[in-house]
Image (tube, rainbow, N blue to C red; front, side):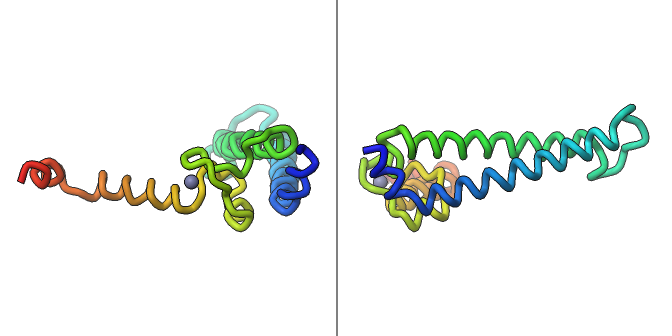
Amino acid sequence: MEQDNRKKFAAVRAILVARRAIIMERAHTLLHELREKNPSCDGLKDGFDDPQVLLMIAGHDKIELRRINEALMAIDHGTTYGTCRMCGGHISIARLKAVPFAEKCLSCKKAEEEALEVLFMTPFGTASRRVTA
Ligand SMILES: [Zn+2]
């Protein structure tokens, strides 16, 4: 079963591993820059040179890194990777390649987006008026 998963999602796995390598590389670079530029932490008030900005980027990467690791764990050890959370159907490999963290199949995702669109695009009041009319 685990072997099957690894074989089945080999392409998705490769994307996740490559993505992780890029993030690790960038984190190392950021950390290096941070140490170099920030021994005393003054005179760094503008934009990208700001250690805070660098930390924010690192923070965003940290979240993605966690999701990547979770996805890899799910592929290697889980039984539900590639299974839609809503309908239990299979999420296509093409979709997983594009969105390795996808938890819903394309049709469920579309249905959800349409539902959200109705929810947010409908002017307040018209939805309930339509029901009572
Ligand atoms: Zn689905």
